[in-house]
Image (cartoon, rainbow, N blue to C red; front, side, top):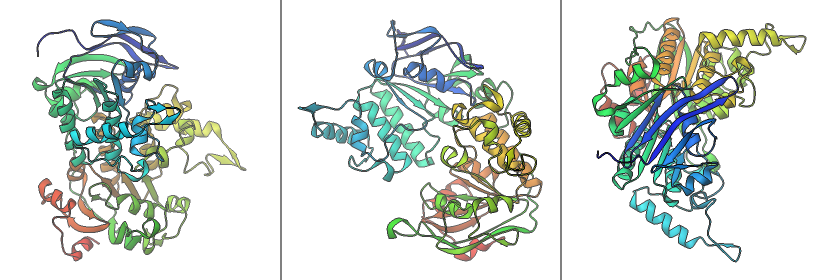
Length: 517
């Protein structure tokens, strides 16, 4: 790459929040036409740094230059005027608006006080066709997949003709197929002269698309390296400050008695549509990890909601430790021995405006150790929270008093994992437990799940990450269009074969689904 003025320079950026220095004298340079990865643990300061560049935060110290000239970015409108766009980890979309309305929001064309949509529609359709997005401009955001929602966010940047594109954890909510498509899109964008800053934890993705990588650790810049000449092991060591085992270490399973059984479970679709879950039967024994693998949108979400009590099944039964809990409340399921790491940590995992301490006792605040004569025992709650914060390495600015909303995504996830595992459940339903986590946190949570298995707990894992499915499972159940189509041994199946089952190209006889029951 020829030496030229960087398109963006962030020089000596420092940003403080109460109790924490999120960015400590960080310098970052983005060359024109490169994909520059920003790598770091949860809470390392990556999203904060990019939020400074996008105008969501003002830096306490430091300057930003574009093409060599110092620029002031006071808000996202300033960033857009400078050609800087951002796709946030949690999308900024209005769910009851159409795709087209979301894309033009804030840059609408009006005449005589009336919206002029036709030119915008033509431009959006042209961009969609050019990049192969296949998006319906009239679809409501709430009716399209997460992968399609992300394409809408990318189209928002392209519609505004941004030349510097920031992707914050862009693959955290995507299927393997959608991730492959996104990588192609990113390469296509830089081929046209765009420049990309790419926040991620995923070393495979950095190796696949990034030219250079800047590593942050605990708010400081550790260094910038050429990706082609740096190994994944070196990157992970820079990120966490120690060697990380990228392979799950676990011995063979020693399954015991059945702890959880689902028989003939079906879930009715919305407004009479087809059943998202059809006649699913499975069982989990103590001391094993059973994984439900499938492409997103094949009934996993509805199945988990039915077994954890968030929705009612239309048919079938659910038994936990010999008890019929098919129509039990969520609390009764919890007190009977079920724990749940939910798919959406914000909607179903945390009360975002509660302190961390309260979130850690959401399922046990009524127990005698935390509640006496109807009054919460705050000292006991905070003492318990401090113990879990230390035990599970949950990093926060203000300890147990930190609002859950202000924590990084990975630390929010670690808080949920801590709360659920500490319930000492008979069955742990873990849905995407490492979504959005860095390699150090993934290693830690995988180790915790294996420890739970080895302690005789049953674990039902639901994951879209093929590496996680293959490395962590003792049995793999493949779900396709709401049905279990195979029961596989991870030691005997290849990733390619698993992919065929997940895509519906291959299916076992129904009797297979009862193997191990």
